[in-house]
Image (cartoon, rainbow, N blue to C red):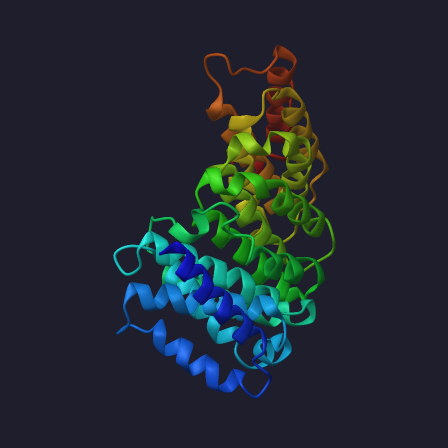
Amino acid sequence: GDAAVADVRETLRVLLENVDADGVHSLMPILADCVGTDSTPARRRAACWCLAAYCSAGAAAAEFAASYADEWIARLIGMLRGPPAFDAETVAEAWAALDAAARTVSKDRQEEMVRPIRRALATAAAPGRELPGLCLPKGISPLLPFFLQGLVYGSAEARAESAGGLGDLVRWTSPEALKPFVTQITGPLIRVIGDRFPPAVKAAILDTLGLLLTRVPALLKPFLPQLQRTFIKSLAEPAALVRGPARLCLRLLVRQQPRLDPLVAELVAGVRAAEDRGVRAAMWDALRDLAASLGGARAVSDASRRAVETLALERILGSGENDGK
């Protein structure tokens, strides 16, 4: 009965709390065998429960983190893929074990695990499908700290990789499960892209911001002014690697922006200020995208229309080149 199961679990918990640093090397292969491909759902769930109990006890957490955390985090991410390989109960137990295992990893090691975690997610995910384990309540919380640490404190390469990792979480998590984490993800992305980092970092951040605008656009409304400034500034970057995703992000933002006149004014000013032909072309492209989005209730003022017409006329008469437009 339930009482007997509770007694057995309590006994196991006590035993696991007393596994020392040497004992962990005997315990881990046993648990790994229990979650293997030839195992049963019941054994997998039991092994996940044992791992979670062991990691939560903390007695030999340092040894586990140093020797086994990498492989176990990757293994447990693989179990988040759900049916047909893993039933819902197994996914829930694997998530609890992942949460406990991730907590054993110190902040100074999180950055080095960003790339292996991304590989594990890519292996577990199916094209066009969400990962069931990430769609549980608090689903992304075990993995989010790794990517945020790398984004905010890592090397330039780690920041780009971590921004991509945040994009992976956005891509494979349901909008409802993402909802509690949107501010926690969006704020650091906006802050980091405002600093002086290589184009690859900024492009990766823009890609993830674009995913957020695609997956949870309504939840980004509090960030629209900051995002608009970010995307306009990115359009003015010398690197085409940054300007391309910035234009796509601005196109997505326009759909959510209730007042378009300030955006028209910024883009007109951007065209006038741009000395680089590529930047001018990007600003013109953004104006064209905005114009294409108009219709019905979506409109700009007569003053904005005149500003664009005047700018176009100035470019034609003043340079004769019209920036290729």
